[in-house]
Image (cartoon, rainbow, N blue to C red):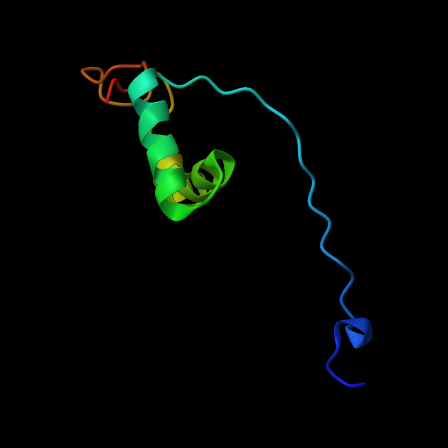
Length: 78
């Protein structure tokens, strides 16, 4: 039987999962929940997809104390 999963040389992918608690303001959580429903995905999946998409842009942000002093050090209130 060529091409079956049984013949595959790759080992099964093992996902490491760790439970964490994240805090979101109410409007952000509501928007995330709405998007999860729209895409028929979990909130966790939405957050992970958003991180993968934004991670390179986030890395380009200056560290605290290294950016424009007129910019806030705190999180955005969007």
